[in-house]
Length: 348
Image (cartoon, rainbow, N blue to C red; front, side, top):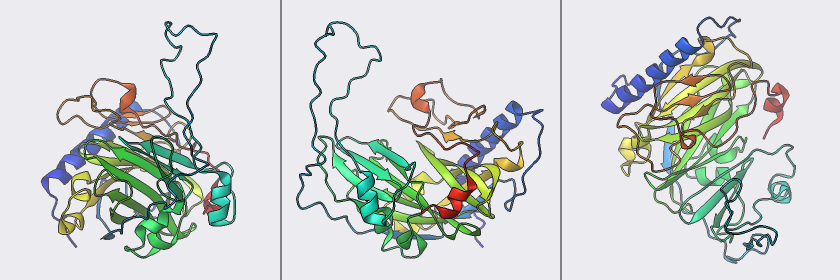
């Protein structure tokens, strides 16, 4: 069993500890019943279970997709172009992404409501709906055909290469010019082990290849509704934990070793770790503590060196942080804490 904790891991541990201290101050005096947990309160440090490198995805040979053509927006003749726009926002292009029919073609079923996510980079938009992914350029032209996220993990093998259990994440890391795609995986939602599958591109090209990781989740809590954020010292994740896929047990907070995961050295990547705090063991479980979002460095705006990432929730903000900015918060909405446990047993 490897017990060495390097400098970066110590910094991540310090950040997670600061976040936890902030949480304990904010929620002090909040009464309630603690849910049973299979994992300790934390911190827990775990090494990556499996890692590999993917092959490059195949580009769509037709390139142009009639269902994904950019459309020039028409000016509103009733509006004065010299006057400011109400929300200060103008779309430069609009195009159709993945459809319900695409998902049905791939999986033979439809999901209602779907789990939809995506992110934009300098030249591409990458979208995921449930376990289906498609890459577009910024004119709306499809670069790939729709593909299952498990396709990325073919060279890794195991459950990440066979399962598309959903709750996808697409995140663009603008500091390293990388793409991160992730989803959870399990053989049986009522029985651990549970896994988080993470693919990180080796360059700014979302076609790949990708560095591949499978992380085994701690304890016996299903890692539902995971949300991610990028910060210079780590990829942060918050999930909604369900004991054996059924009973809501609060929030789990993770800090993945970003520096090792984007390394070009396979030996370094093989030592990637995460730090985990089981916040469900510290605070009362319920609607007051669910649907958390990790901080995401959504712009290249400068922050204080060593600034700690935040995690935000419905009523809770964790840890010290730089000046408040809307760019500091995650961009995807998590499912509420009272999510129907029956969906956990049937989601694919």
